[in-house]
Image (tube, rainbow, N blue to C red):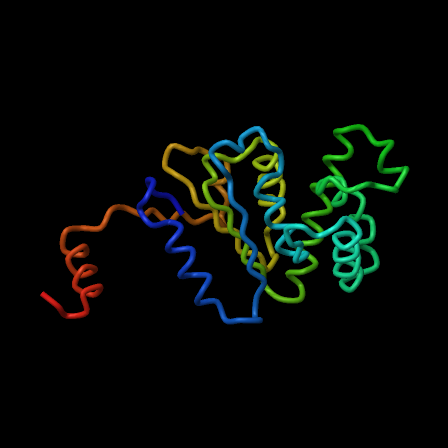
Length: 202
């Protein structure tokens, strides 16, 4: 979803989210920040915290238990994603084999873990994954999105990306990519909006 600042991208996403039938899909949202370009995984962390219902102020053992319970209720085979997720959330990692990996290998484990978890969840019910302000995305998150998008075929995952026209990406050639452009309201539409707000008043 592409449009200039203030044109209504976030509002359209909000209205869309509010209209999703409750309980029939999993809605997860992440946001990029204008000062977050150097903060790796910033919107991905939003998504993981929402997925695992991690609250501000949760203690480390509570967060670990939430992740372990939710992951293992899906599939015992997903146990291997716990160390990279703990690392991503700045928790203490006890898995020695993971700790011995070099940074490139750890990043590969993080990418695989998030992808595998999302795909596994989408087998239960469709996932709507939204990321706002993509024009401010950090490099690592952008690379993860490219990795995820490459594997979206035949999954029940709808990825909604909101960004300004100046942002460029390599995903436009995908057959399952659609661009929705938002422009300013016309004078006529603006008048209709004001009349609706005034509820019939002059």
